[in-house]
Image (cartoon, rainbow, N blue to C red; front, top):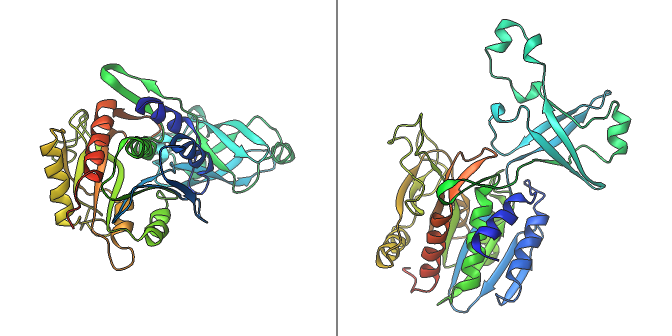
Length: 349
């Protein structure tokens, strides 16, 4: 299976934070016979290793933003909580699948019709607390008999669509595209040191999988693999979002909160320079990024144990944390090339 096919397969599979099992199974199937060892820890992080010597850990997270069943009312309508950062305005009218122990159940997110809203209601963004899921049942007993229970995960229904000029549109490219790229690296690289690819859980709710897996691996060097916000589209000034599609992977110079770059990653300078030099040496197009909108698994790796020299490489993606993210396949291919070059070279630290 090629990189594009792996991205599509991973994107279309369900895997909210805490419910990444299907993704982990695909990862293990894809890597069987390509690595020396595959193991799964108590939290369901998936570890794939090959080679020997000093340890390089590359992490990509398996979870996607989604929802969870919170309440079922007497008429059979379902209220939900959010898993990860989702703008309320993206949810209304979405078709969803509730993943129950009895199997998947289709539903739609509804609200009070605009025709029945007062003038002041129409002018406001509708909060998710005013929305509900309709699965077609008329009573709570029917919903429960179908298998729906409090705590069940809910995934937005999306398949991958191919746009023009080699672009793909789909859900969960954050960070299933990173998982696919890491699979490609593990399949094709001949690492100069021990490479441990970690497919982490629960990144979207607090870097939880990377925190425990980095402690377990205890690497000599860490690389986080994720997506970055490509904003080469209307309504964004270039200085606000300079990352572009088809300009290569983004090498992180810093990330964190908008007011201070706190809570994020300031990469090890030797690791940062090494990644840039490898891209230049191998004629791999790349971009430099300072991201003020959050952080990645790279932060958890850096802060593990006594500290790990770490960096981050990201795939440019338009409309991140929506359910129709857009990536360029050539950027994914170049990102895989850069990571292969990294694990096949001497470490900078």
